[in-house]
Amino acid sequence: MTGLLDLRGLPPPEPLVRTLEAVEALAEGEELVVLTERRPVHLLPLLVERGLDVKTRELPDAHEIRVRR
Amino acid sequence: MPMKSASAASGRAAAPAFLSEAPAPSLPMAFFLPAVVLLLAAAFAAPFLSVKMADWTYQQEVLALVHTVTLGFLLAVFLGASVQLLPVVAGVTVARTGLVRWAAACYFVGTLGMVFHFAKLGWNGLVVSAVAVTLAVVLFLFAVLPVLARAPRGPVRLAFALAYAGLVLTMTVGVLIGLDRRHAFLPGAPMDHLAAHLTLGLLATFTVAIWGVSSKLLPMFLLAPAPDPRRQEIALFLNWCGAVLLATALWFGWPAAPFAALPAAAFFLQLSLVRRLLGARRRGRIDAGFRYALSAYADLFAAGVVGLLIALGVGKGTLLSLRLPWVYGFLVLCGWLLQTVVGMLSKILPFLVWQAVYARRAGLGPVPKLSDLSPERIQAAGFVLFRIAAVALAIALFRGHAVELRAAATVFAVSLLPFAAHVAIVLSHLKWPRAFGAAAGSQHAAAQ
Image (tube, rainbow over all chains, first blue to last red):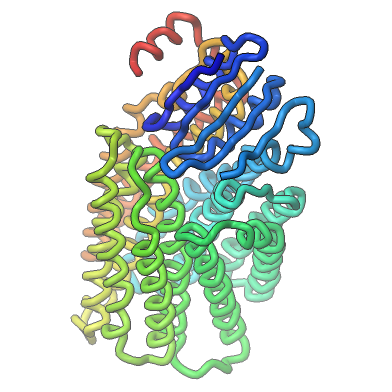
């Protein structure tokens, strides 16, 4: 199952907080797609620290982060 | 677009992509915290120099005071912002963090030495201290330039490159002026050399640095699209080249007014970019930190007008020619640069402290918002007080009466106390992290 979290338009550090809240609810094998305005450099290491698989890529109007537990 | 990936299991292989680019908050703090202390020291020393301020600008105690602000506060904050911002922009870490910490220590020892020896007019000690500051900046650039080289082309990279070039020019001219005091080898008048040194520092270094940091910080916190990068780069180039040409004209005693046209054009271009950014922002309310930073443009405009009057020779041979340089220097140094940097630090420090203390708790329990770290009303009061104090001190500097200067300088120093309180409250979270209960968390969620 894949969920989508569009966090564009939120001031820092809201995207970080909401993403970390959302990933805590992920079940094993579930994936969350997060869209942010900018590359969330402070968020990415925290996701990895929590044992999650993380993939990122630049889109024309967003930064996409795919998080899988 | 190809995807970058990392995981706990494959963390080592993928680490360069994710784990290392976010800078450790303690690195910029090594510059920011002593900078705030030195700013307060300078502000509260100023009232004791009121008699000096009623006289002309070129006095040893005034040089000490100005260097406490320029080296002790402005440049220190710029160096700290460099190690905070450049790795984020470039996507690579500062590899030589130990070198940066040594550079910070050497920098502040050298700066204190310079200030002390300016005040005591000890030229040998001044030379040794200036060497320490130069060594610190060289070490710093050695650590940071590889990061800058990896940054993508754009306004931030250009601004930092130009600001570092401006810094090298400013320091070189400063050292030449110092050596000239002992050996008198420079052609031209010493006051013209000082004016060139000041122009390089204030316009070719700090102003381009501020515009570079703003191009990242303003869109991020005001939730606005980044301004047109091409126009930003033109503004940066115009300002930097114009400042260098203006400094050259001042150095050789050429008429300065025609050379001031380029920085003036850059200012209006930058102003139009900021206005457009404000118009396109999705965050309606502008908080106190940005009110400092945005109102500083009015002071830069006023400084430009006063600078033009000086360049046109208004009041030449009268007392006015003694007072206008004071007003110009104050408006650029305190009205424009100091006010902007105070505003930006008011935003950057809570962010750094939040990252250091609360980021790891996010998702596992309630965490504060950035605005919860320090009461907004303290910053708002500080901004109003600062505006009143800055206008009062500018008028007092124009009038040149020692009693008025002492009173206005005291009010100006006091106006920085709310900023100092804001910094202290924010930093207290490092030592005493607050517990935010479920109630606070739900209020937080409801407020979004």
